[in-house]
Length: 173
Image (cartoon, rainbow, N blue to C red; front, side):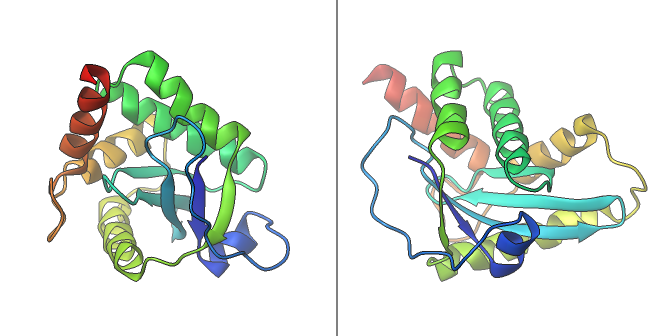
């Protein structure tokens, strides 16, 4: 089961209702990418979602839409990035399915991850500085660039390498 830990601003922007619950331990489902920290990024071309996965630091960048389209946008961008990284199709379907069919929303409880998410959002904002219009191809390019950016005190430091390792280890197990 995928948990999407939201900032209050993101929860409001996607039309979330009520108070975000605390994150619960998760052992259900076949997804390997289970916990995401997510925030909104207001840019000149329009609002975006920036999400960072807790174990790999994989970054997803996509248009920020209200629920339920939010989940479709997030899942499609995740699927596209996993495909680019060479993750097997069956594994991509599991990861995307967890976001579309069994998402759980919660408060951000990992301050270190949230700090890294804010750093990634800053880099995304810099990459988008001169953009007046965004295409999905342009967002994919930015997303790929962010996934090739190292994170200090994280091993492996590069999210794209961490994802490849995670899914190659799963395939050989």
